[in-house]
Amino acid sequence: MIAKFRGFCVYVIHNNYHTLLKRPVKHFNEESQRLLAIKSSFNAGDQPLASDSKAAQNLNKEVIHHNHLASEWWDQNGPLKGLHSLNQIRIPFIRDGLVSRNYTNKKFIGTSKVLEGLDILEVGCGGGILTEGLGRLSANVTAIDLGESLIQEAVSHINDFSPELKSKVNYKLESIESHSKKNLGKYDAVIISEVIEHIDDKPEFITNCLDALKPGGSIFITTLNKTAILWVCGIILAENVFKLVPEGTHHWNKIISHRDMQVLLDSLGCQVVVLNGYVYEFWKNSWLWTKNTDFCYAIHAIKR
Image (cartoon, rainbow, N blue to C red; front, side, top):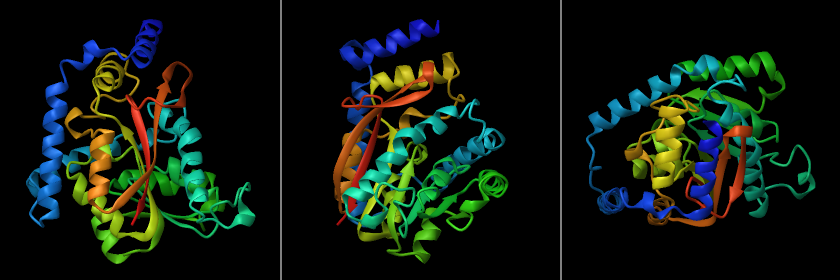
């Protein structure tokens, strides 16, 4: 069965299986129109289209869902093993992006201190998988999340297994809205990795992230793409059939396409400088960069 799933996904990726695209086209168009409406109302200073109470309820559901995974967060063979292996490509992506913008001290390039002196904010850090990886490159990382169990797990792990990083990593149980108000223009980089697909009000969320970013600073986003291929392979099969990801982790209506994300970032005063696609080879728990963004994409943008 796994071999069949592997073959199906590979076929879809490399042959652009257009038959699958017929059903979700309507959804793509509706999503683009909805996002543009949000963008227009946001730029005009109006309230978001979704009610605050509904957004809060949805966010609370996301927090509860991920809180339930806290005890398994650091199990590298558990349900979140894909997040662990994702570090193999997302950490170099962030590191190289910062080096390319000349943020780093040249004497540390090529060393484990390459991010020395940089202040980085990770939004939605979970149990700290990416956070610790960035701390090991000597970045000063502030990592925030709304999941109390997740922050507790992150703090416990760093205390028990990586105490040498305690001077580099600061975990906070805090929302980005609250944090950004107290830290305007503080950070050299803001990272939103595997998070934006869980957020309802993306314009407000990203605006808050950008408020905490210095002018000329970098924002890094990694997420799922809103395509038929992802819907079939990444949600229907991966979650509901093969149980590769905990069921209910991703919701189609919350996923945003790379094109809509670029439009949104541009409207909020950012210039996208890098857009890469990546895909998960679940049969060997590894990730690959690809020119094809049908499954997932990574964006590096600069705040103007």
